[in-house]
Image (cartoon, rainbow, N blue to C red; front, side, top):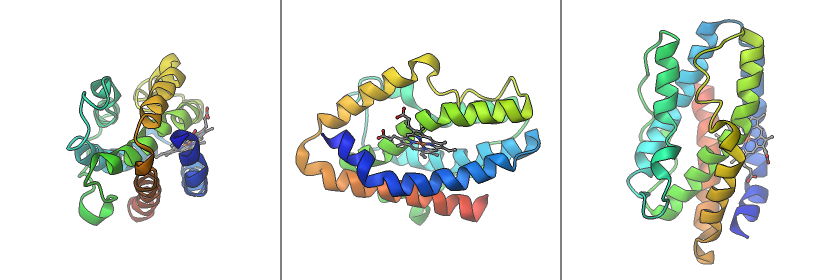
Length: 184
Ligand code: HEM
């Protein structure tokens, strides 16, 4: 199945990104540090969602409107007294010129809700925050159900799209790692 293959094919890139982020999160000592982390996600996910939305709408994904992440990040930034930053553009983003490539990028964004719950707990435990965590709390107790329904949509894509989706997913992981290296 496409979703299972994607997990295998992107594992190395996920691990590299996870390692980088765990290091960053362990180093957080203040609300200002957390704000910077949110701004990192805002810049990259914001640019990414703007591209994705050119190719994916309610037709391909009926609950598309519910899944947007950039707004949640902006809400968290504002709740903590910060300002959203400039979004990634051009070569800072993976190439997204088709619905298939957009699905590859969406796989990374939607999958981040799984690690997000772990990140949210790490941060709230470390900083004792009770606000500004809506993005990392993702879909709350519906997170696994939302992930299962996203995988269903992926598995219904034609099988000849698998390579394009996989390449776009890996590029999305890699470019996020680059973005963190440059802006973190
Ligand atoms: C501290 C950082 C992170 C940790 C500890 C982490 C941890 C995890 C864990 C435990 C899962 C599997 C959950 C399950 O199967 O129920 C997972 C899945 C996933 N994560 Fe992460 N993650 C992190 C960051 C990220 C980020 C930043 C992204 C994307 C930008 C991401 C993308 C994904 C994807 C796409 C999957 C789905 C894999 C699959 O196909 O099943 N993760 N992550």
